[in-house]
Amino acid sequence: MSAVSDRLPTFPWDKLEPYKATAAAHPGGIVDLSVGTPVDPVPELIQKALVAAADSPGYPTVWGTPELRDALTGWCERRLGARGITHREVLPVVGSKELVAWLPTQLGLGPGDVVAYPRLAYPTYEVGARLAKAEYVVYDEPTDLDPTHLKLLWLNSPSNPTGRVLTREELTRTVAWAREHGVLLVSDECYLELGWEADPVSVLHPDVCGGSYEGIVAVHSLSKRSNLAGYRAAFIAGDAAVLGDLLQIRKHGGMMTSAPTQAAVVAALGDDQHVHEQRERYAARRALLRDALVEHGFRIEHSEASLYLWATRDESCWETVGHLAERGILVAPGDFYGPAGDRFVRVALTATDERVAAAVERLA
Image (tube, rainbow, N blue to C red; front, top):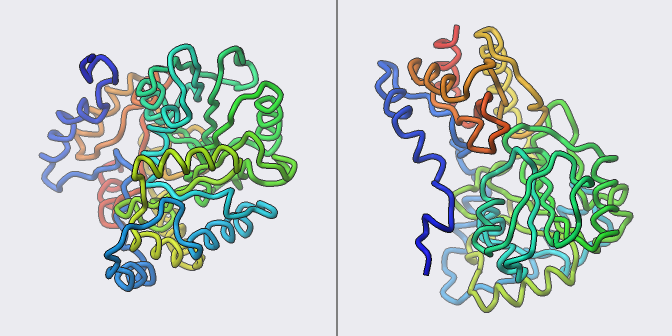
């Protein structure tokens, strides 16, 4: 059996440790803007739902309770515009990262099969292909890909790390191309609720998919919209045949969302007010950080949505990381997301108001 180091890339954040130590030595303490981990409280109504379901001694079901599936389909209809979506077309998962990492394996992909993902992308797309021992390619324009042996096409809109949003026309063209070539299209839409200068659209919208979910799956998470990263709460929606196969595999694998978490998700998806309030927090932090970075000499590209600012000083990303670390600010180097990001840094909005204010002061 091959060593883990032979099968997987180096865990990116390990490389950041020396810079984290430098930032932590700042007299005012570190401002950590390197990861998208929520720092604000879990909304009270969600906490109450979790506690009320705490006495759950039996095993939960992989497919989730009927109440959970009602909440998932209802939210997809209300928020994504998905028409006529049924229980067979939704499936809870144990956080979206787990799904991304293991989807190629669960789809039965392996040597000779190809997984494609954007040139600048969340590293776990590559990890998922490697775990399945499949091949992987990156793209600038998905419809320029060679469809031979291509089995899984990842979209990510809004993008992590760039915040770029694909237009309705781009999504429609890509869905049609994937269907024409028999390629499963999976759209990572975990930041869809966080559009700032654009209104992100799901592949499940009828204008994009023509009212049919054949050949497409959307991935959604409650980590960002509801501060539930610690709950591991996410779901997929789309092609019933694909989700049906995944349900059977996940049953065998015991990949269940806990019963209290399922109850919390029902509460979270039934309430829009807490999402609005959290968006307002992020919008305020984004405005402060964006202005401070620009005044400090950065250029911001894309960043029209998501929880990040994609920023550059037109130098090596590691020079920028070091420059900011000396000021007690930790950011993620752009090359974590692919060689094309080697002159950018990703600046997360996930710090408290007090820490964001500290970063702004240091950048002044």
